[in-house]
Image 1 (tube, rainbow, N blue to C red):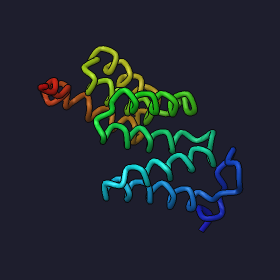
Image 2 (image 1 turned 30 degrees about the horizontal axis):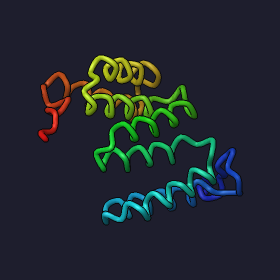
Image 3 (image 1 turned 135 degrees about the vertical axis):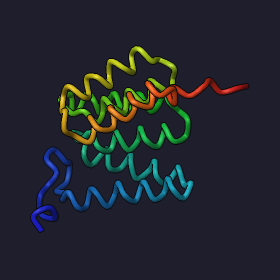
Length: 146
């Protein structure tokens, strides 16, 4: 129950972690339903309410990534990285976007940094799986045909 009462530090209004989670999960649901504008509106609100949290930026980056807007995704993931420079997940996501943009060398640097920052984290596991996919030849994807 402490998770419900634990407040998000730096939020503009008192907000529990549970409330923030519900808002961002709703954004993912809107994405799954193809309601991108609704998802973007929720993410924008979450970003405004939690300006010091990297999580809304990661969600925004995911939305852009899923739309195939890799440059916009990278921008959002870079903002998350600025908010949480010692966390691996924003770096792993940056690496993913860079791979899909065909910037393999830069991507691999980000993924390696993600592994070094927090070796036993979800971000490191994500980075490792992306590196393995690259080694297996599954990433980066072939360029889109016009």
